Length: 121
Image (cartoon, helix red, strand yellow):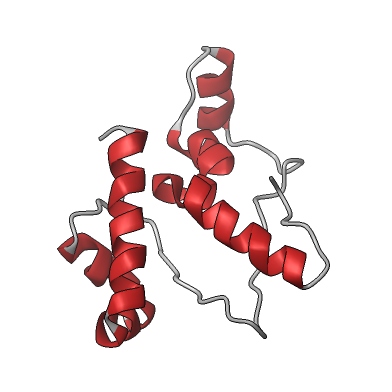
């Protein structure tokens, strides 16, 4: 699936959350099952967490430590010029969720209102 299609799926899910409180609660309670039901593929071995920002709560996503040691298989993938799933996740997050432009614009407004700047953008 390409990034544009994936972003459209996430945009539709966000819109559905804002229009349907019970769907939003379902997504918060069981994100993997809810996303799967909406056609979003969650790779095996991944855990998905959905957090809600409000006017009084702002969530920060901490990226993986860039200084962490790579495993032998990860080193082989990098040395071979290939980008493996772990490196892809570090750049884009699972399913590109952390690089969604509309999500960023929404959070930029929340941070600006609170006198800050989104981290990692």
